[in-house]
Image (tube, rainbow, N blue to C red; front, side, top):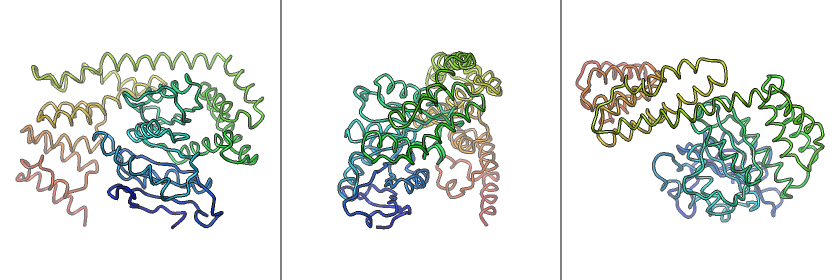
Amino acid sequence: MQTDQLVEGIACANDPSQTYTLYLPPGYGTAEPDRTWPVLLIFDPRGRSVLAAELFVDAAKDYGWILMSSDNTRSDTGWEPNQKALDAMWPELGQRYAIDQRRIYATGFSGGAIAAYYLSRATGGLAGIIGVGGRWPQGLSSDDLDFAHFGIVGTTDFNYHEMREIDAMFAEQKIVHRLEVFEGPHRWMDSNLAREGVEWLEILAIRSGYRDRDPAVEERLFNKDVGRAEQLEAEQRWLSALRRYRAIRSTFHGLVDLDAVRAKIEALQGDPRVTEAEVIESRWDGFFVRYWTQNLPFLSLLKDRSRAVSTKEMITRLKIRDLLKRAEKDSYEGVVAQRALRTVFTQSGFYLSRELAAEGRFREAVVALEVALAIHDESWRSWYDLAGNAAQAGERKKALGALTRAVELGFDDPDAMTRDSRLHSLRKTKAYRDLMDRLAVARE
């Protein structure tokens, strides 16, 4: 078997239609014949197995982990593709690889995180999950959790509060957990945070006796963790620093001397700057929840067949201009406003517009996309979808303008335009032919 490289397209033995990208660490197959290895199952919501696996490769190499990253997991297409992927990949662990059955882990982003949670509850065989920008699956029991959870989420991720709720759920059940927040929207974290998740699970393996004690590794990872907490203090992010110190105390309990960490926690808990930060966070998180419950439901007006709703009306009802103004502020208020805007953008420009288009309600889909573009007007995908829906609604001029804007912002696939039946009514226009010529020239 090839080691220390990503190998794509490995077919599952039980279902060859299901494939994955594999990474075997250096020494696999040539080290001690009876050695077993930790494994990380990786679930990307678009089946981007290589992109997702690459985030973990360096850490997997350093700590001797196997990676298995699915090509077939999906979000927003129903549960069946994920169930097939899980059913095919799980037996691979015992049939083809020398896996340490005590150290089977999973990670996933968005719908991929949901797949990981389902797998844990279905099998009871996961020691830990690195959940990224996800939510707890509706209808799935959260009682008697039996795996460690390392949560990761962006500050403006529309699943930010859901990840906070998952972290609180583990805290309530006194299950070992941690939540790390990075600056950014709904996406995978970078490889540095991926490494932190792997290293956190390594420390837990030592605490559980699943890995031999290694004082050098324990001290190095402890010092790295403390260094990050000290950096947060230097940046005057007092509440984040306190949370980091608390996480360090929980992670390294029983392994290293924590007296200095406890002293830091005690000092920060009594610091008025921490209290002020907690008040501000609570205030603006409450603002988001109120916005979610009071304003976001206005999107459902586009589903009402008894009346027509204009783009202007929707922008007003959703308070888009107010949110845009708040989002400019260099404060937690600004972060929360950005989070609210990204939530509306996703709900309107992705979920709702596709639902309406599937029902043949193209004019309403156009309004949903125009609301999204009032928030983020540099998304070529949204402009392209607007062109398709406007064309089907008979708004040829708007469709051509939107298609031109999509090309200006980076759309560069004339073959996709040719295949897209939504654009059929535009193909005989000079503007459409000019765009096709423009894209053809760009490809030369």
